Length: 214
Image (cartoon, rainbow, N blue to C red; front, side):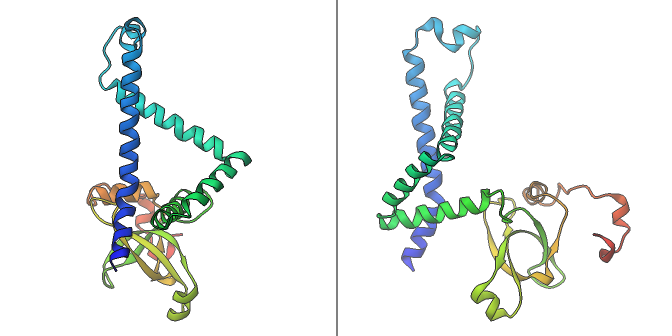
């Protein structure tokens, strides 16, 4: 039980901590590089004005450049081999292995361009029949879950308001799921705004019965 809670907590804080650490190191590096530059060649002198938070802006550019270059590297055969060796080394460290593999699996699921996760906005009856809430489809459950329920089940993520990064998963019978036309961005805006920002809906469709809307 303790190990499960420990890993769950690390999955939340570790990516954030690593990101802040890397960003802090980059900001410090940029500051040192700017201090080493001759005064005549510093951005303020060249542009003729002082730029607030210049080190932070440059750190963001550096971080974005590193991410893009890393993507270019791992997109070829040599880069994939390096990643394989790196993951093999991490796989030998028990706790690090569990965290890394979990975060990687979630990231691949969310950012995959071919997957269905977080691509559809659904309407489900929750927390009881007659009440509705927005949900994002994360997958279709099979195996033991489908066998024990005896029907096709869809796994959905229900984001909380006003922080959509937290929430919970619900396994809903696929026949009880209503797929909406709104985009994921529109759904998240509605969640964050406490329902105040609602996607526009064509007036002609408002007059149709639910069964007539395709």
